[in-house]
Image 1 (cartoon, helix red, strand yellow):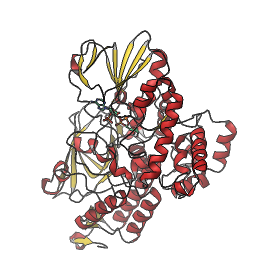
Image 2: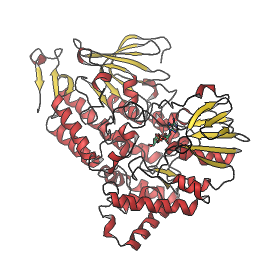
Image 3: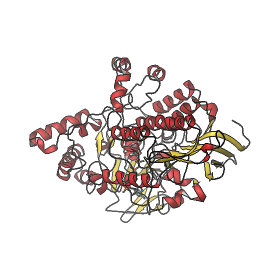
Length: 553
Ligand code: NA7
């Protein structure tokens, strides 16, 4: 890649982001002979796994499923070593895929896209970057990730702190020595829950500042026996096929059995069994946890009991019990020894619901009732999820329509893939797609393959642009809402709803209907001539097709 900015260099497609979505999209479009450039803010591939390199970062989908299925060569060549892979192994895997497919030659790293402006007359996108590049492209594909833009932590006095501040979402590449230090950690979502036990082992003292307690289940991560990996590899395509038909896109147990179809002692023993086996198995014994309030409450109580049994100090145990948000309403975390960590002498939970943080001061954190002296501060304060990365870029579609304006009251998309007014621009795992509620690699594969088919469809018919219809978009947004409305997920203050970012419109963003249902819907739309999309013809190839061609409305 050149160091000098490029002006008006032309591409068939520009892909923003070199995480798993950008990598597979590049491979797929290049295989079609397209000239493609991937633009990536990071210094390498891997997306979320490039940035979130804090100690303890680990995926909560089992490794043999959280990986690409499209290449038999890759899935046979790579060997996972743990049930739930840790960040370094996933990043090595992303790098291995990039090497195997020779992806880097079409990737531009350390570059952020600043604007994407649609030219109505030319039907192309003008893309500018912070490196001063100006590119022109027929298609733009946003592979920007659902959790890539850290939320502004919005903590008074933060800049006055004398010691180092580490964001889990922007963790340094060199190891951080916490030995002999007193560390403050703010944030107890997945990231905080994963990093805390690691810091606790090394630091002199750890203060965990918790505002909202999360539900977390023991991951019970374990090394993968070679025999298991061989068995998986021996029947990988059958396993992948099952995953494709699974609502979550990976082989976790599911059931439609209702909680109260069990006797109380059976419920308790089923819960205990799932707790012991670890991971998300709990959702495989009770199928109604996210819709039935009483069922949800009962299981929440069972988790409270586990907290009481594990955490010796009753005040700490009480503060750790999640209340007010139903189980599953916010992302359920998987942990390794999180609750047990609070029995260590050097770990203190600070309940900032009761004793709010007032300000960070040069030597620590001042709460209403206390002053905690710390040497280093770790922020695991979350992300501007699902829309943050898209709205950070100045995206303007037809007649200068800005995406920020279009989404002022919340994101609207068709299938989570396309937006009316923004021709030839696609979002991979955008709002309105199953994305974060699934094995996201399985969702990415579905999107990339569906979009590649759409582009084939256009090329075969010499169609220049594709755009979602307003009515189809409106109907999809309603459908996404209708699927979420009966669930308890609407009752939690979660990032799924944008509730973690002050002022963000409260709209439930992911599609809860399941990846299998979504896949069928998307396929039926394609089979129906891309119902809900309209195409414009290509003057270059045919004078007659220059009229607007509307298919399958
Ligand atoms: P999350 O799940 O959004 O968690 C962020 C945490 O930070 C959460 O406990 C917040 O408490 C807390 N927070 C945020 N701002 C503050 C301030 N100002 N004061 C105190 N506490 C604060 O982000 P994660 O990175 O852990 O996980 C995101 C996803 O990444 C995860 O679900 C996986 O899919 C991977 P609050 O809830 O706002 O009270």
